[in-house]
Structure formats: structure tokens, C-alpha cells
Amino acid sequence: MNKARFEAFSDGVFAFSATLLVLGFVLPQAHYASDRELAPVLLRLWPNLIAYALSFSVIGIMWQNHHALFRLVARVDRMTVFLNLLLLAGTAFIPFATSTLGANPTLKSSTFLYGLALSATATCYNLMLMRLVKGRAFAGSVSGQMIRRTVIAYRVGWITYVAATIIALFYPVVAFAAYLAIAVYYLIPRGVDSDIGASPAASG
Image 1 (cartoon, helix red, strand yellow):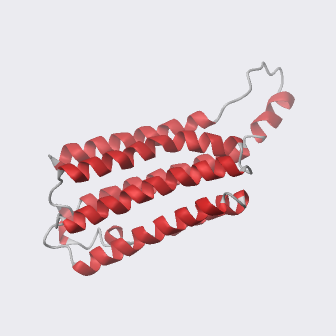
Image 2: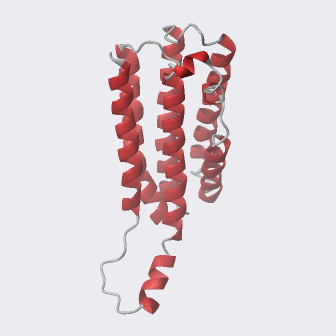
Image 3: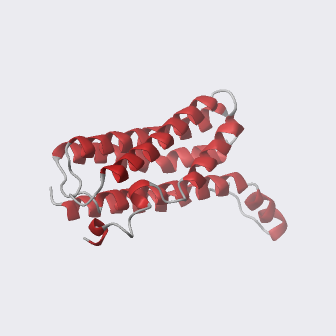
């Protein structure tokens, strides 16, 4: 498959999913005659704001990782496309999980659903990376050490998301904090992302 079309379609889904996150902010259907009536209602939306910021960061990091990874990939086969579609399907589900979490931030069901969505996308990322490694799809200038660091970084994310999802069944607030911690962890470039500026293949 043409790699440019593959990346363009992926970018579109990431962007659309991030845009849909704002739909998690919903005011009760009522007419507010004054600031005294409206302000408390807006303030009660603070869990939605935290969930929005978390999910926007998550989707942004996913997009950045996707961009960094595929700049170093020389070719895309049918199985990679299939796994990428699963990843994008999971990404498109994140806005719904986010709105549920924002409306019910301390409930087991909502935090578990959110963790399930992120664990699913992390699983797809790891499967897709394994496919790229197995199919020798990376450009010749990409070192084995770089690939190993990338695999480790992706595995850490997957394990942590799954662990946080299980924790959500017992301690929802702790799981919420874990989701935030994972987002902060990935704000620091790792694997192919950390070498994007230095790699010869990155300029291609």
C-alpha cells in the first residue's frame, strides 16, 4: 500500500478522534438567567476537563508515536494495514470512554471502560510493531538497538495500561491517577521517537 495514503488516513482518524473529545462537555438542558446559576454548573464539569486533557494528551502522544514510527518504515503490507485499522477503531472509541469517565470519575465501570479502551489501543500498537519487526519493514538505516528500545517502550505502556485497568475494578481513583502517570511517562520521547531528529531515515 502507498505509505503516504496510509499515513494520511491515520492522521485524519487521530485528528477526528481528538476533536470529538469536546463533546464530553454537556450542560443540563436548562435556561440560566444569571452567572450565579451558570457558574456552579460549569464548575461541576471539572472531572470532564481532566478527562478531556488526559485523552487529548493520549491521542496526541499516539499520533506522535505513529508518525515517528512510520517515518522509519520502508513499506506497509496488508497485515500492517489491518492492525492499524484496529488501532484506529480503538482510538475512535476513546471519546466515548472519555465522556463516560468524565461524568463518572469515581465509578469502577467508567474507569475500567476507559482503561479497556487504552489497553486495546496499546495492544494494537504492540502487535503492529511486532509485525513491522518480523516483516523487516524498517529502513536499512534503522539500528537494531533503536528497534529494541522502541519495543521495550511500547511493552511498558501496554503492561501499565493493563495493570491500571485491573486496578480500576477495585480502586477507580488509583486507576485514574495511573492513566495520568502513563501519559506523563510518554511525554518524554522514547525509542524511535527519541531518535527522530538524529536518524538519517527521519529526513525521508
